[in-house]
Length: 272
Image 1 (cartoon, rainbow, N blue to C red):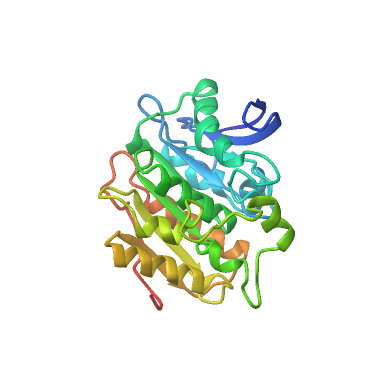
Image 2 (image 1 turned 60 degrees about the horizontal axis):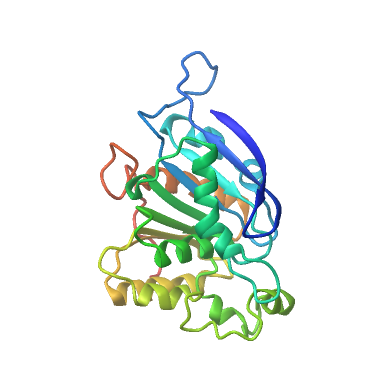
C-alpha cells in the first residue's frame, strides 16, 4: 500500500485543507502484509471522520490500512471539521466540498475509478450521517454506503433531552434552517429513496447513545422497502467497536469480483 498525506487548496472552502489517501499496491515480498492490486483504475472508498476528529483518525485508531491491503481498494479520508458534512449556515461549504469538489480533485491527483459500481462511502458517528446523506442524495454515484454508530436522526438531536447536538455546533451548521424533512434529514431521505438506491449497511452498538436514532432510520428504510444490512449487537460509541466493525464493512462491500452484498455480510442481529 501507499499512504499519501495530501495538502491542497479547496475552491469550495476558500482555504487549504488535507486528506489522507491509501492507494493499493500489488506486493509479494513485504513481510506481514499481502498487497492487492487492481486491473485498471482501482475502486475507492470515501471514509469519513466523526465530530471531534480529522482526516488522520481512522489511521491512528484502527488498522484500516492493513485491512484494505489485500483488497485492491483505494481509501480517501478527507477533513470536514465539525460541519456534519453540510454547507454551514454560519461557516463553510463542506457539503459542496465533499459532494462536488472532493471526487474531482481526487481523480485529478490519483488513478481512481469513476464508475458507480466501484465507488463506496462509509463513516462513523457524524461521518456515518455524512456517508448515508451523500449516498441517498446522489444514489447514482455509489454502489454501497455504510454507517457505524451514525447520527442518523440528526433532526431529533436538536432538542434531545439528554444528548443533544451542541447548540453552538447546531447554530453554526444549520442556524435557523428547518432540518426535519429536508435534504439534511437522513430519515426523510431514506423515506423517499428511489427505485435503485445504493446497498446500505447500518451498524450500531446496543449501548450506544445513538442506538435509538439508528433504529428509527432502519424502520424508515424498511417502511420504504429499501434493503439495509443491519448489525445491532453489543457495543458502545468507541474505537474498539469501530475498529471491529470497519472489517465487517470491508467484507460486505460489493467489490469487483464479489457478489452484491459482499463476501461476508454480518447477520441481522439485535432489536430492529
